[in-house]
Length: 255
Length: 71
Image (cartoon, rainbow over the protein chains, first blue to last red):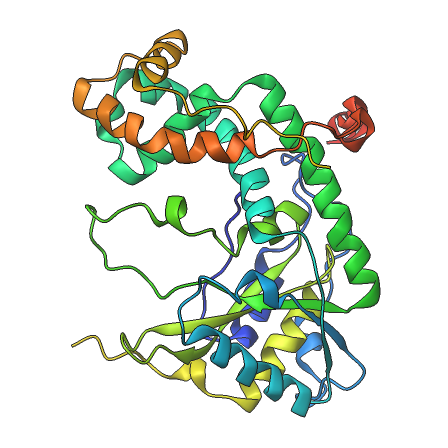
């Protein structure tokens, strides 16, 4: 269920990048055989978002997040409103429901990928990755199937919300980045991942910087997601936000 | 009302060792200790999955043979 995506300075760069890499892959059963849109055209409109309705999933980050995140998100929402978007709260299942579902599916599938190496050379895995993948060995078939059923229910819930809204907004991460320390505790266990719900629904999502934490001086982020194949909508919103702000051009002071 | 398995007691270290052996894993003791520490959080996640979802929530026919044939 995990997937990769481009990492660039700006949403505009993502549009150019995506234009090159997008397209049907006959070797990939998950690939959709649909026309590739003109992602760069999504950036037109002089940064206005008039007529767009955005659903704010605030309850996913209202509790347990970095204290600087909710105010940064509130400021980002005001920027989007200033660009003409209508932003309204939307209630979905809890972040924990989504992460329970996604984690169960992911660790079972990850274990299937890495089983041979985990049985023959487990010491060659990093501690955090090993202890995220090994639990997949203890997932029972009925757990996996029930999680797949739950995924369909949760994805349908998102699809219903996206009939009311052109896109969903939430935070990109609940906390700032950890130090690059292999001995640190695994945060996945103590703090749910706010990117997981959008993987459950298979929605295109994009995170853009929306501020910096006061204590650490590290980036905070806003996440934008839309219906499957609606990448142009995601890019339009993120690009408009970045035309109105300069968070993506700032750098944390790491010295 | 939600039905899940979160009412079950957490697996003991001995139970985790037994389940791991049954899965065909022969972990060095240091790695086993790490896994015994890690598993309860994952076990709790799995046990919170609702068990009352109908079969149609993820139909067995979600396999799409045409996609394979056309691929």
